[in-house]
Image (cartoon, rainbow, N blue to C red; front, side, top):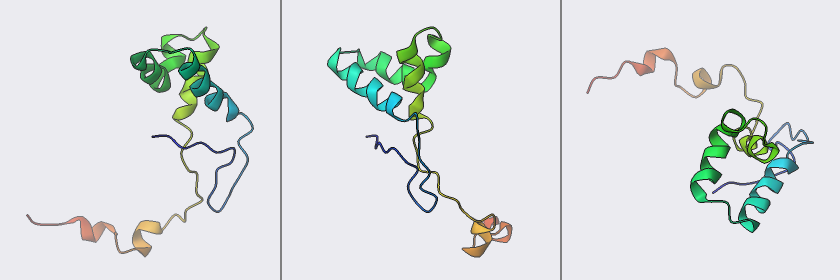
Length: 90
């Protein structure tokens, strides 16, 4: 399952002016019955597998389509996950 948005969301909520290219890739792939294995491979490495195919390159937009929240540098320490808590005994 993949979610789509024209902005980053979260606190920063910056626009993604080229996000539509990934959305259009998904719609076109479904409409043209692109085989599932190609659909997945292009999303992971379309720019390497078929660099001259604009649709394959657009498919790699999946990689950057996650949330992009601005998090503080000390998030792990603030939540009690500092390096001292990584010394567990099993």
